[in-house]
Every structure is written in C-alpha cells, then in structure tokens.
Image 1 (cartoon, one colour):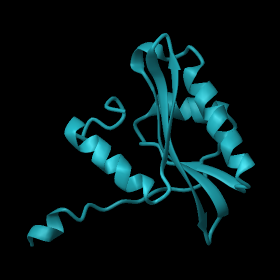
Image 2: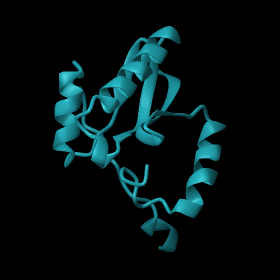
Image 3: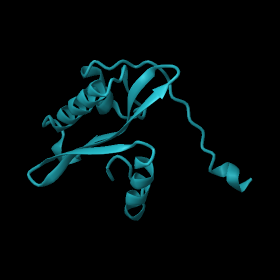
Length: 127
C-alpha cells in the first residue's frame, strides 16, 4: 500500500484502516511466495446516481510483481465479490497521471464515465 499511498505514514496506516473498516471498507490481498503481490481496498455502497455499487478505493500491484497477472487476478476476485453481493456496478477512481493503470482498467472492459473533482480543505482550517 505504501507504493500507492506514500503520503500515509506507516504508524498511521493501521488506525486509518480500522476507522475505514467501521464504514464498510474491506482490505484484500494476493500473496505468492510469502510476499503480498497485490492489494485491494474496496467497499459496497448505494448511491442515488448508480444504485448498488462496489467502489474500489485502492488497487495496487507491487512494483516488482507487475505484468505477472497478480493485479488481474485480484481485480477479477473483487469483481466476483461485487457480483455475489448484488452490486449493479463496479467503480474506481484513478489519478490522471497513472497511464499504465488506465490501460489495465480499459483492458478489463471498464469505461471512463465521468470526471472526478476535488478540493483540499486543509488550508481553509487555518484561515
């Protein structure tokens, strides 16, 4: 996870995951050769716009393990969990700079369906 979310300090990671789990966040990983090769953080939710969905917060394959089907295997596993849970759709956001990830998602038959807008509120607290 540190490769995908380097801004999260190691000593903060577990506490953050525990808080997210109380909101329905699930963490899954694929292990091979006693090493975690891929990791997915996801949740099931219902939204007015899309109905029942599986939203993937985090999906990463270890940099040394890419192009070895670990990411695809874990992706397919999460999609299967979403179907089993009755989700109507499967969603994730991906940073605009992550071109390799975009090729991966498009190859998995995902479509680019919207723009995601964000605004930092951290500076507002000091105003």
